[in-house]
Length: 401
Image (tube, rainbow, N blue to C red; front, side, top):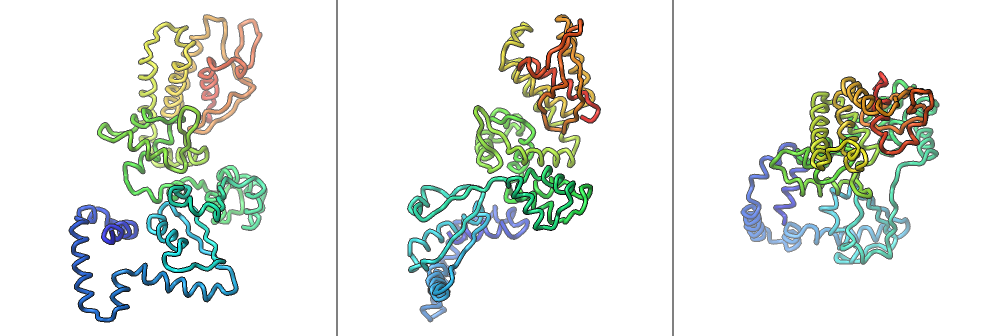
């Protein structure tokens, strides 16, 4: 146990040590540590010193509590444990033993605050339920975010609006942007690289880290989509379960998806790091959706448009094609859709231009309409799912896409 715990601690805090320690036989090392403990016990004759070396937690914690009780005669004592998804591996059991009185009575006016990305394990903490209060931390409200920036002496209206937009009012992003103390809107830097690094800080496995980044590209996640992003020999099932357990991924009705703000950050980060990889990954996803649409075996054109699953696959196919090569693909898609609707005497037109950000499929604006050649027209938004691809093509034809 000591050997295993020491290995994990060393891997966390000593860069590059994981490559060496993964080759160490922990069973053999544990035996050697046991022999060392017996040797030390023989050499040290003072009973208290032997106990301290062999059982440091059991020996020191009662002394720690004794000091706390003396200090707690008047004020309340507060302990704060942060990043518990990581530190809990070493502290969870110790804190529970502390509260259960294993090391002696804890002060009655002791207040513990535990914060982390995941809730405490109910199998371990159910016995303390009556003494616990769970407070979910969501994004700041608009008023809370503005109040925070005001306390940071950021009051310029344009700067405040820029920070609120880039951060999505997430506390961690507000902090990153406010730390730079910008005094104009133009001086507010995009926080995507710093924020992504914080989100992925504790993910050490290279395959998991890459998946956490590139799985932000699909709008809808399931195990099959994740498998299309992985090497052929990867364990897609295990990696998909790992991804679903990440705090920035949540279950929706029939799929999983990234938190919207986190996804925006990762998409901007990926596009900045490598346009070639961005293009290649989107093309891989487009090929996956094209294959899924073909596998449905629907050959008749009208039957394809009537089939909701086929339309969904086609929408995601064109979405990733547009992300991969926006200028080329939007003209190609627009032409195909014009040819599709031409026999009906219809053609698309755009009355209100609007730019969209890479990775975002916006809502169809009121200016997008489908027109008959005699001049009559209807809002595209009112014409149902069948026209989503047409709306995507219209919007993507804007030069700022």
